[in-house]
Image (cartoon, rainbow, N blue to C red):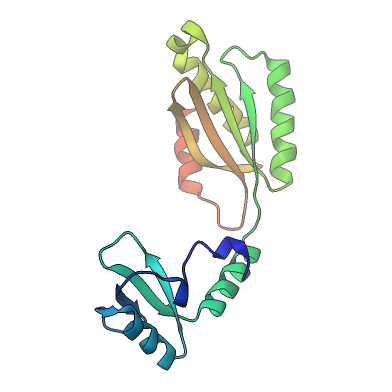
Length: 182
């Protein structure tokens, strides 16, 4: 197996004297390490240390190569969607805003998530409502290209929204809630 799966101790690598043996269709009991290894071997499974910090150590009887294979297979199937950030200010003028909206449209067409954020510098944090209006205006301009994943939210001195490309199962209720605010 590759090194990234070596975070778990398997079979003879386990050093505990007693282990709690768990597994599918198996009663959870405490055994000595030798007895747990024998049980796993008779079931043609591997003994994998799941929680070494517990007392006694928790081990699971499982088919280790099959588990690693399924991890790789599931990782390959996951779609890769990147998040790109676009920075605005509460006083961004219309020309700059249209330029950044076009950039956001391009990113959404390329199936990438877009995080639009407004950084409040100094005393500009007083004008949070202007920042929220700017983000809602962006949502209105991009409404045909995206769905809102995270509505306007504050995080420290940043107010942000996360937009994702439109897919077959859009979340219309969230978009209609945002449009009502506009």
